[in-house]
Length: 312
Length: 312
Image (cartoon, rainbow over all chains, first blue to last red; front, side, top):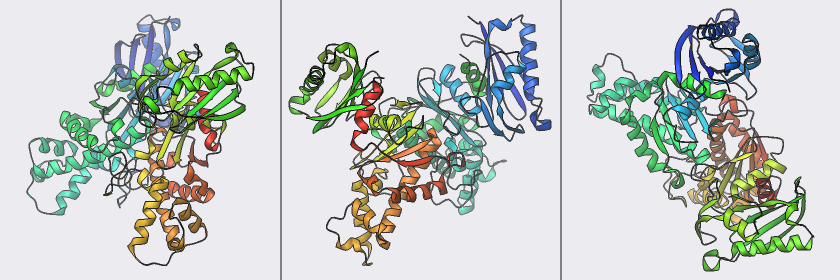
C-alpha cells in the first residue's frame, strides 16, 4: 500500500501543490510559478521537478507514492485529454500520459479545476458527510462541480458543472463572457454583483451607503446589506434570487444532498446562505426542499485536496 | 451464468412484463392487471405469481434467472425503499426485499419508472450508442431520467430527473400539479400544450384551423403546425422554446451526449426535434452545442428493457 500522494492545483500564475498521506492528511503545501511561455511547454516538466524534489527531501520512494492528481484550468476528458487551456497556452493533448512520463511512470489523474475543487470539498470539506453534492464557486466568474457517489460528473465534452452558464434570465441584453445572454454568472459572480449594483444605483437617486464606498464591488454590496442599507439589500437579494433559481434547476436534474457555496463572494457568509436558502425553499420542487446549502470550508486548498482524491 | 431475466414496468392499471435473455433480447411480453385494493397489498404477490408461472411454462430454473427488475411509479431510494406511490396505494417499505421474498429469494432491483425507461432507451433504444443521456418524457406530465456511465442518477431523495419541474417561467400565475409556478411540465406536457393552445386562441380572433379541430390537444397543435397553420406553429414554437430552455440548463449540469425525447407528445416526430434543436443551439453553452437530440425508439417497452438492465 502506497503511503503518500500529491495533489496539484494548476493555475495560470502559480500551481498549488500538496503532499498528502494516503488517508488524506495534508502534510505540506507549497506553490510554484506557472511558466506559460512557449505555449506552456515547460509546465509539466517544472511540476514533475517539484514533485521529485519533495520526494527526495522527504525520502519518499516511488513505490510509496499512490500517484499525482492535478486540477487543470480547462476541459479535461475522462481519459485525460485536455482541450485548449487558454490560461496555460495549451492545445489538445493527453496530460495524464505526458505528465506520467515526466514523473518516471507515476500514476497521474487529471480533472477540470472547478470539478476537482468540488471533489475536494466533497471528500474533506463542507460536503464530507454527503455522497452527492454540487459546488457553486462564486468568483470572478461562476464555476462548479457535480459530485455523485463521491465521483466527478465531467460530461460528454467536459462541460458538466458549468453552473455559471445556466440561463436564468430570458430578457438580458448584456452579453456574458460565453457569448450568451442571461447566464447565472452575469448576476452571481463578483463581477456580476458589481454590475447589478452599478445598474441599480444609476436607476434613480435613492440614498444608499453604497454611493460612498471606495470600490463598488460584491464585498461592499454584502457588507452594506448586512448593515441594513435598503438598496444594498435589494441588490444582494436579486443576486440570491438568481442563485436560488440556479439551484432549483440543478436539484431537479441531479437532486444532490447538498450545495456547497464557495469562491470569493461566499465570504459574505451565513447572510448569503440564509438569503439563498430562503428563496430556494420557495421555488424548489417538493422532493428537493431538504437539500442542504453550506459554505465551502477548504478555501484555496479545495483544489489540492480534490486532486489528491483523484488518484485514490 | 444465468441465461434469463425479467423486466417489469408497474403502473397503476397494469404491469407490463418482459422475459429477456441475459443479453437483452426480449423473448416475450405480456401484461397483468394491478390490484390496488387494500393499499396495494396484493401487487407484489401477483407479480411474483406471473413470474413463477412464466418460469414453469418455459421450464426455466431459478438458477437460470439473473433476477427481476421492476420500475415503480414513485420515488425509490438506491437501496430499494419506496416512498409513497399514490397510484398503487403504497406507503414506505423496502420493495426489493419484500418482492425478493415473494420470489423465493430471486435477486430484485427496483427503480423509479421514468428513470428506468431512460435506462431502457440508453441500453437498447435511441441512446444505445451513448454512455450518458437524459430522457425527457412528454406525456400527461413531463418526466425524465438522467443516465451517466450507463447508470441511473436517482438523487438524494429520488428526485433526480424531475425534468418536468425545472422552472422555466418566472411570471407564471397558473399553478403546476406540484404546487409551484412556471414548471416545464406546464408548457411541454400534452396537458401543457393544450393549455397553451387554449390561452392563445382566446387571446384574439386570428383565423386558425385549430378553431375547427374536434379536440384541441397537443396532437392537433402539431398536426396543424405541420400543415402550416400560423397560430398552431406559434403555439408549437412556444412549447419547443420552453423545452429547449430545459435542455439548456440540463446540459450545463450534466452535459450528456444525447437527449432522448419520448412520451405521447414525441409522436410529433422530427418536426418537434427540429424545432427544439434549432432553439437549443441558439441558447446552449458552447461546450454543449454538440449534444444530440433524438426521438425515443422503444415506445412503451422502454420500461421493461430498463427494468431488465437494472439486474445486469
